Figure 1 (cartoon, rainbow, N blue to C red):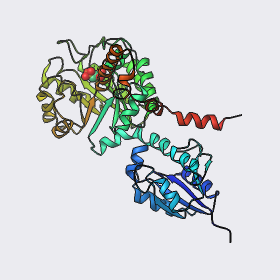
Figure 2 (spheres, protein in one colour):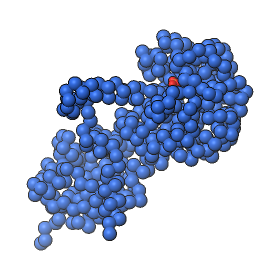
Figure 3 (cartoon, helix red, strand yellow):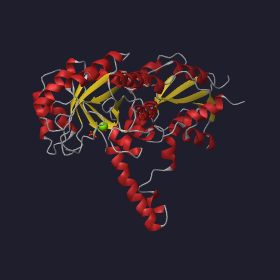
Length: 423
Ligand code: SPV
Ligand code: MG
């Protein structure tokens, strides 16, 4: 009797979809007995992202697929049972992987002649990453808020920072007017244009599955400008905007004195017009008042916030820069509405996110820390290079590897496209 040919394929199989099924079918065509090496949750998290569906559930679903004969745990080379151990233990004849790329362990299996390695065409139309992207981007923010989740979002204006924020498992991304202006060599004084912020937002939205909230300053002008702003950002896949009651030109909130604010009525009308202009119900407008920052007092801040809610604001930010943090922690005590409160704790970093949530805030925006982290690291690295006349001192300590940088680019997609469209 002819020996049965055993096939082995590794998977996460999160949010099981057609692409998984097509892969399994192609894998099965390579032999008679198909073993799926399924990555446990911690392993999947290490190399890709934490799965949404648990290991037990993913295993149960896979065992129900008729082409699958056995599902075993596969921990790659992080721990036992490792992939190469499994290949030997189950006397695997052929290991199958998609043709998008070949992980080093598969190359080792081939080089060490443990088994044959075959690559089968990837199903191009759907992937868990694509699914997540669609589900998360706009839906996430509103549904998370409705579930009364407490969220921490972090600033990014480029794809790399955005991906690092997602990797670190924060809840979303803030595109800061202050950071974006500084990156372009401008002060945060209203010079940056809507289109420049839109371009920054597009890059970030494309790079991540997290919801993205954009700092739209004072809406870049009057009612018409803000209507266009809402339309453009919503179209770009942004989850929400923040709009502040600053006159034009605006000043940064973190310094400066008592300057006039836009009238409450005018800012309220801007919010109303913005809410009417959005196409989906998921899009969120954060109404932000500078009343506390500019010394008009809590009562005025609350009066404005209340009016902005009546004009349709989905969330309220009463911005504070009082350094003990007491003023900020006081805000929720005065807030009787069920509309979530947003806070930017730049000037009171000693207050933890937990303290902010416990006091009643729903969304914490870390508005400029990533850019500040970069400045210090780059300064330090440049000094080391200069002092040593060599890049070696930064190579292991300060610098990410070339692979780190490459892996933050869509290198696998590029390879897949090159393969698919080869003449
Ligand atoms: C920004 O990040 O541009 C903000 C927040 O608007 S703050 O700088 O704290 O005012
Ligand atoms: Mg700003």
